[in-house]
Image (cartoon, rainbow, N blue to C red; front, side, top):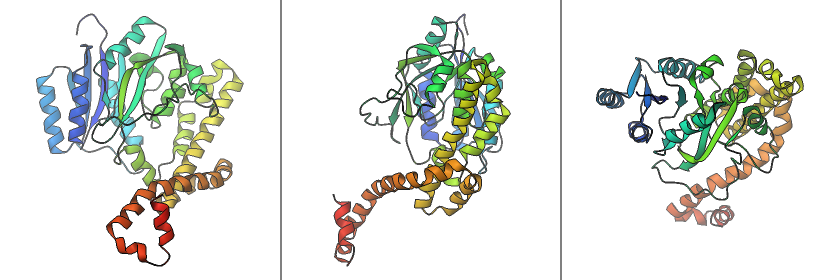
Length: 357
């Protein structure tokens, strides 16, 4: 592919044909020509399978790894990530490697700007761009005042990771809704590749052990929609706390961090688990408000003995109640608009008044 380093993109394909077409189209439009696209065919439905195989036939930059059966399991991400992602990683040959979800998009110069971060600083082992949100149809969502990703072009990776544990910092140095880091492939594989808890394993198992780069002009468009896998897994009761314990054990995170001091290592391990428990508590409460009791039971089995759960539960119950009411408001308003007679039902006039405020 020439004298320039190859950039490998790993992505999955299963059932979202329209999203896959947009996502892969953006990859193939990259201004940086030396790319390879590893499509992991995760038991794709016929129309998706036909599309990606035709793409492979037409474009030499596309390579497909096939699975006859879908590797996703309702009991967690483990099989999906450890099998599919790492199989894609083994098939990659580029100096740099990155996973992109099949429903997201990158700007046409994204890869070029990522490669520039690595080439400008040989100590750089990880790199990321800036995330903007789009809706299901691809329309850019309003951003509001910028609240995060205040960091320099280069910084020590462990300082970035530590900053994510400081929940009271006025300037948030890192924020991303999902996996965003590009890595030097050989170093990434040496440190463990893809773990079930992909974002936390990246941030605390790979990024800290080198310089990390950031280019806020390189844009990843993250699609918000109801079929997102993380939302689906929350509804199924997937426990991030349980997966965090597995990460701490499998990758011996505390031991890795001891190069920055034993006190720092202990702080990281403790707060990683605490944050995961608090996130699970929020997921438990949300499922409770939506009467998804099976998911609640899954979370409760992992958390009932955990002090972080009981400490945060009263506060999260109150906070999520406010958000839940806000979420339901347009639905209640629509109900009164569709069935006008409901407004005359005794006892519902107050609810109607609140819905239209």
